[in-house]
Image: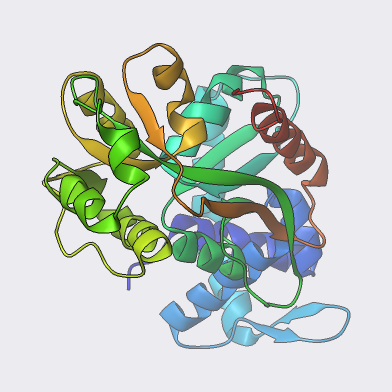
Length: 303
């Protein structure tokens, strides 16, 4: 394990303020993040740096020694930062937000120049984002799965519908007749097509088949690409099928570059949640981001 400079900044803040909450306010980070940094530093050094009491963090002898040894180095680094940092006139809060990269690009990226606080984006699967929230490394996540961890709340705010889309050059002239008839010819037609997917979303294709046909697809996609926008761009240039969230490809469908051909016998919808801590120093900033996303996902916005 390699030491992280932020661990030492956190240690100094706890030492000088005497509390976890005081250190969190001083560094503009979450209290769970402060705890995570301290635990990591103590694991790295191999000894406790504070005695934890109900009201105060009391430094141990090892903690006092570490503080004396690193203080001058930290002051020197802060002086360098001050000299090279463009002054904004006030401290800016820093908020960490997690979601899938496609949702960020579609819904939040355009709003970043308007923010009056710092933003750190993290991307990953729903499971990874929930884990990051539980560990305190993010302040807000957008996810379709939840957890029962104490101190966290998950607020449903919209649903994403999965739809079957076809490439610009895909011949779907017989599709409506086939899909309304016997399932075997319909499934045969679907399996004969070129399919796109991402490595992270293979479960969506399986779910689509299970919900509509009661079985797995029995084939692997022809093209595994980095993200859903890659799929949309590829379909806009040629032939193929994919199962995608409708809100991501609405504009491309409206422009005629890809075709929405089916919602399924039983449409698949995933509820999306805002996940956050019940208490946060950055509630105002979090609510601002939530408002932006609610506006982007508002009914009628994309159709």
